[in-house]
Image 1 (cartoon, rainbow, N blue to C red):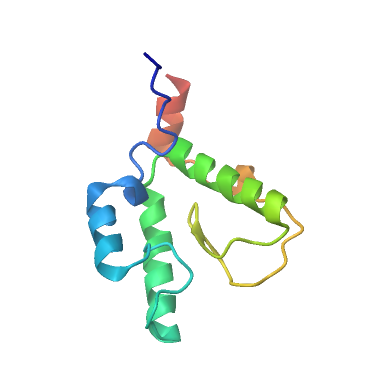
Image 2 (tube, rainbow, N blue to C red; image 1 turned 45 degrees about the vertical axis):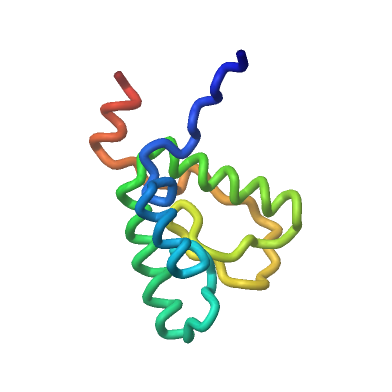
Amino acid sequence: MTEKLPNKFAGAPCATDEHTEWMRKHRGSRWDWLLAGEDKHSANRRRAASAAICTSCPLTARKNCAALHAELVDHTGYTVPGVWAGEIYRDKVDSPNRVNLASIPTLPFEAEAEAA
């Protein structure tokens, strides 16, 4: 029997059953750059709201999200558009720079949890 790998995104709002249902209904993720049929104003509002939701994400999951985005950028040479770890990345923008994982703020309760 194989051992189950730990979930790098445990506790993240984007990994919930509620969001899975939202994706089915809207045929995309809240964290996507643009959804089919969505106008620019609606997309901007949704992306801002999604970035704000990321602040409720556990620090470990946010860091893993930022690391995944950085890995995808390294692999493709382009920024993967959408909301990643609370940052909004535009569509079709070259990105030679890596995401700075140190720039993700640690909330006081998260710092206490990491120290324990």
